[in-house]
Length: 135
Image 1 (cartoon, rainbow, N blue to C red):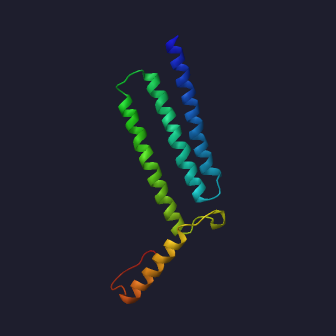
Image 2 (tube, one colour):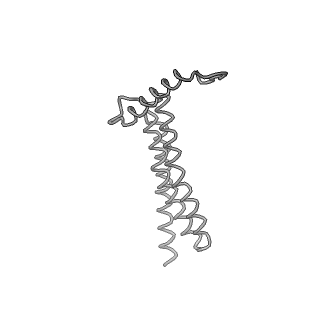
Image 3 (tube, helix red, strand yellow):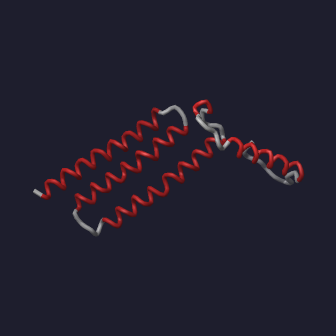
């Protein structure tokens, strides 16, 4: 009886984890801009992975695998927001997002100030012997 309950809980966790991962994949395909796709790639994916790893831990019924599963989830939990942040900033700087969908644009003043500072610095010390591949 006890094993049956654990199997049912593990099955529910597997189904929910797969649905969360499916939602992340559909969001990547269907959302209109970079920021919403980035959100879809990180939020449900981390929860989906947690549910799948929990189901795996329940099904294996061994405490020896718990640290490995926990480590896998913590690494995902730490890397997903950092990578999403980097993709978001790169998308913002390269203008690969829809500005009309932004509710608040707190980064605009920072980017404008950095651009002014960079142009001022280049005016004082023009680059010598430099090749710009980005232009």
